[in-house]
Image (tube, rainbow, N blue to C red; front, side, top):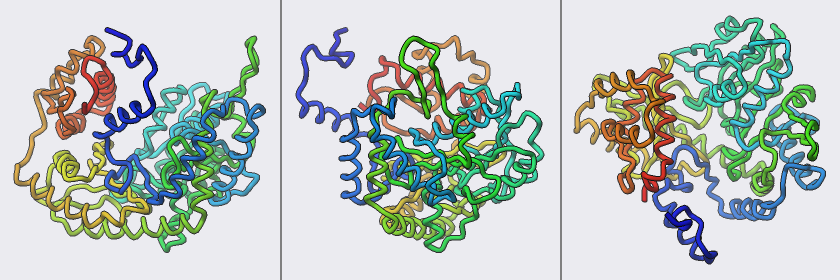
Length: 491
């Protein structure tokens, strides 16, 4: 095999050719603008704002965030970005914070800070609602912190403060609330949870990654938004992603702290080696300043009026969608969303198969994100509505109606009982990627080039497995997906 087949040509290639190849590779990707991809992407629908962010990103592409004394521009930009977020979320220009690469890194650092602030706890735990983001479980795995997931109210999908408080022990180092939870778009009772945590002398982190830069604008547009930010007594840290409803380029989140001591516990320093002294505010050391500059430019280009307008439009679109889904036989909205995130579940005597519905909707032009059942909570399809979603709500509702009819016409699909039993007996550590990939067609999934994107089979399979087995299966799927012998997905 030559270097060219591995991606490295013998001689350099012209930029035009490279960009053409990128366009070809991304042709099968979900669209990132226009509101038809209802997860992963956040579109402000404003070309001028995007151009400002792109220009700022490229201008700082080679600036290294490793050493702020070498590149003081990153200090100036981070102060402005953190200050703007803090001022909107119950703090002020003196509120300590960190600019991170995303919500997961913000959450990792919040958990690290809480853990390191209690070095006397040998086996630290964090108490989270069962609806908390997977990033907390990732933080627990990386940082050797036990995650105690507490059941939520099965009707409202909100955390139950009394149950959260009861789950705290002498090993608890952090209590978590969501504003809102990603899966259902509902805000936990932050004030009650934070007060109970403070009563035990415990810090409380609010995961406002998806809602932090949305909920204030929704409140200004007339939505009833429960208190959730640093103005709430007992809230000691809060994460807010700007690459979501801040509409900034990917790689932009802010982690706020109530006091300097907790932020210091998130830092890492090492002067115990013969090289330069390392001191990091984030997990990354070297990091491009492009995302920081892009976030700064987006905030400046949109301004408060721009965010107000986008928030109002997203709220209108959400209300429109919720009402429309309620009128479709067999579908219902789970809970009462506080934000512009909607979970669509099934209802009635003849409910459509959710996984087939997701595939059918995608084939008709709208991507709806599958969400598995867990901890007694039903499966659903996730929809995030942004400032441009209003233009497509009628189209999405029409697609949902047509897709429900098409799925019902095909009849119910039984879970693959034999395959579920087989997977429960397999030792995944003995399978290589080729052997694992050979099992996937039985689940209705073909990873070979040009095979398409139908995922109903694998989602149905995952939903039928215990959560721990789901995790192992999902990691093996990812490994097989990146195996070179399978070729490029969608090629």
